[in-house]
Length: 294
Image 1 (cartoon, rainbow, N blue to C red):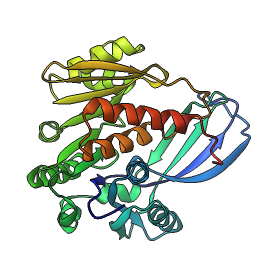
Image 2 (cartoon, helix red, strand yellow; image 1 turned 90 degrees about the horizontal axis):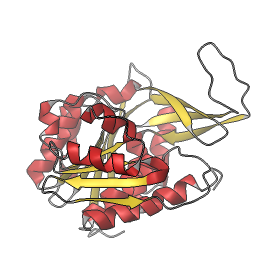
Image 3 (cartoon, one colour; image 1 turned 30 degrees about the horizontal axis):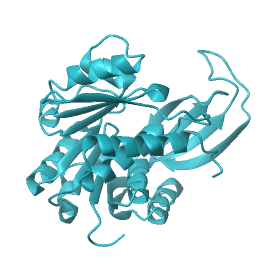
Image 4 (cartoon, rainbow, N blue to C red; image 1 turned 120 degrees about the vertical axis):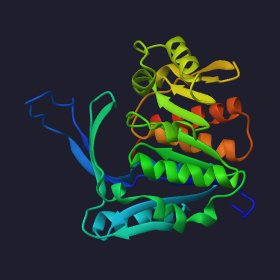
């Protein structure tokens, strides 16, 4: 990368993930014997910052960790991924964010997150990182930090002349203040159902319908539909879908974050939305078909 590289700023979550592999995810009251477990540095924010850097962007992370082993591992991981982490603060009185993800034999998973230090983010962290908000830059947000913190970051990027991308995951009701600042909304099928209050989105055509509906509120909407592909609609009537690249599935974990990070890097480069989505679609296909050891 050079100083002229496109700028992506990720404001959001850092989690130390405990990954558990088993034959199936447990039902209520059930104990399942797992096959193995391993740690992984994650959090939607951290994953997206590293994906943007890997895609060639000048990537910066604004976040929070605690002074614990998890926090040190998370900041070391950002450094190894060529992410500027000068504005990841270390807090006391609370632990670093973490999660436990349980995978089944088909590669799908369910997870529980404990936000911890991520919930301390706010206006002061945006002010401290003012230098990274610049014209032409792309800000990436998620829903793993407080809404008011996202609003502060979005206002800073809009004031600088940049673009705001919100990966609205996990799904929650968004404030009017945040909604008004979002340029590109990225959601999966479940999140599209919850945000748009639409019927079940279980096909690529359904994802496109959901994107069209949500585009009444947001300038550009991207709805990912897993193995079916991705749909996009804009508030000026553009709408299209891209079929998923067929691969042998190893694991879906992190696919959405890889997709969003590469999408942000493409937008920062000045790519049109379709070209940026095609690159993100390819990157996600590689991720879900690559064994974790690689």
